[in-house]
Image 1: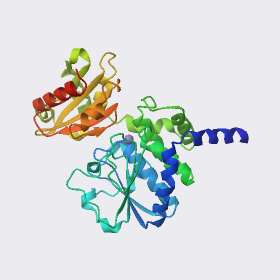
Image 2 (image 1 turned 120 degrees about the vertical axis):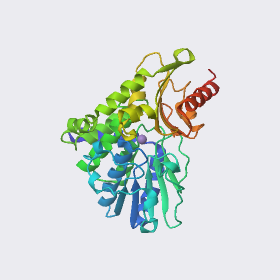
Image 3 (image 1 turned 90 degrees about the vertical axis):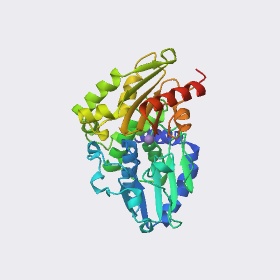
Image 4 (image 1 turned 30 degrees about the horizontal axis):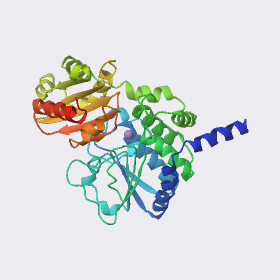
Length: 350
Ligand SMILES: [Mn+2]
């Protein structure tokens, strides 16, 4: 039995990418020097963002470090409140904190500096050392030290590998946070980038999670009648472009106001993921007007060689992954649609 365990352990080490092995010790050295460490949730946080921040907080505390997680720009989603450690999150965004209280900022799951805050200019005090740990291909290497592994399908998977190198002891708190981030960022372990190593990590994590089913359903069974109505409106608005290669849904603010549905209630990523299940649609967009002339987009692609949606969003000021990306445009819904369709035509030679 013990020789078996050794074997599994060995294979997990093989799955860790060389850049993680190279930089994890450098990051650890900075952590050892630090007295007070800051962590944040990115704007419109997803479970990979929140799970990363909370798992890291527990890992840092295990090393005897003081760590603080701030909620960041957005209201903290109610359906994430059962993540271990969520109750201790400080209800402030980056611009509201006193940077001099911290000497190290570990910036997780955030490709660009605006993922620290979109509320204003993010400038770091010289006394605040910045280290980014991220898995977005579009990462702008804006921190002083950057560990970016785009082949990792979830930032939480990347953290598992780092924790292994750091000799962190897995606990139920760390495991639950890493698991839920991996589960969601991989679309329940099915998106591209998921491989043998992903399942090896999951196998290690679930050993520490007594009720994995409840952990998932407590988060997933959190939809609202408003979101259902929104989804219906989005799906009935679908327009098709480029001979059926691209499907586009959009919901104007006037509709939201009429139905009294708050923008925080709607998840365009769920709409775009659902749209992508149509076999013939190569890439899709779900758009919603969240404020007058502020359009939020979620893009998905199942043909990333031809239709890399991160390329499309980055060229318009957004970011993300080749298969899943986001964008905000400050213009009317009609113009935003035109801009996206024209840009897709140009970039993808349609
Ligand atoms: Mn992520």
